[in-house]
Figure (cartoon, rainbow, N blue to C red):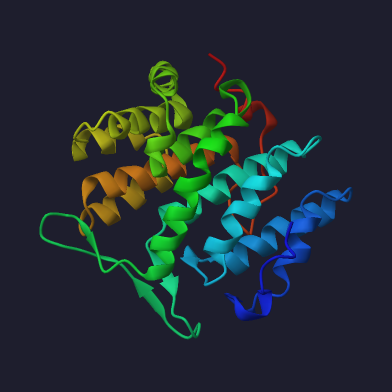
Length: 258
């Protein structure tokens, strides 16, 4: 799976991405601690503090190839889905030599401008594999991950998915709030900042993020990030990310049954 790329010519957050192939292989290994260590390391190398590396777009299809593997660990499946969504949700990337962080900006109309080439490539990679990823996810098992991915890959979302998300939006909690935001974005509706604040108010961390970012970023961009954070909180109540990636709540994965 990983032998085609010249990993010595690609960079992750720490230098040449030569460690990435072994980490990808470890995700399907028999050792639980090894799988967890590998996903943590991949987060840190390819999405370091929400910043993409040169290697990240090239790894996206390899992450997607893992999802249909027979017997794939449920926790790893959840992490892979959120990892793919998170890659498309960020707007910053390391420079080609890895010494600087380059970020997108917004024009007066609230449109993203000056997107780093790595961000553009990563989003294109996620858009390309999203239809196949959705084929291997189910609402009964993967509702939170599907919502996170839907907000960054809307072209891969079917009307049936939108209807199912709308049903989830009537529920309370983080998953219901994430579903409400996703439905609004997928239907092309304007998200009112005050209603967004109200919807996320049950999660103080996400509310703080929304308040902070509404001052500088367009509401729909903030809403997209809020949907991701709420969905991640629903799936990983003890925290999502490389520092605390072992907090998956199996019950929350089934919370999307409709």
